Image 1: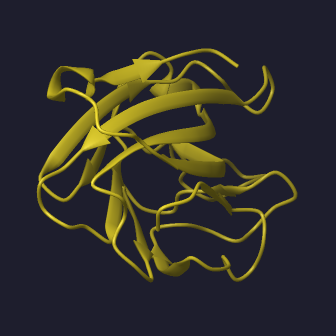
Image 2 (image 1 turned 45 degrees about the vertical axis):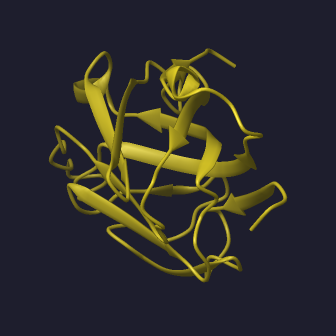
Length: 150
């Protein structure tokens, strides 16, 4: 995977280049909520050794300002999201440079809010889209988590 690609979480099933996903609920018009404290996205091929993940997401009120951990191979990044479905989705940018080939990206959600009588699901992180942009050869110092508001 040497060219940029985007994964949409609003389609069912999640299309190529995703092979499988777990920890996610049903597709909705904007994306999907997690339905577990761990979300795993497995790609058909290895991710680039260096890439930027541009994640369009939202969190529930219990996760505003809390770290969400993303693991790819032996690399771990964390981000804080303040976007909600009510306030608007947020764009988070994380850079990875991993020595180990990896096909799986995992999200660890710190707090899953219990549902209500209207919506009984336990939610924490909502994923809309994720764009993977391969990085050109850069110094290892550039492989840090970057957070921006979109």
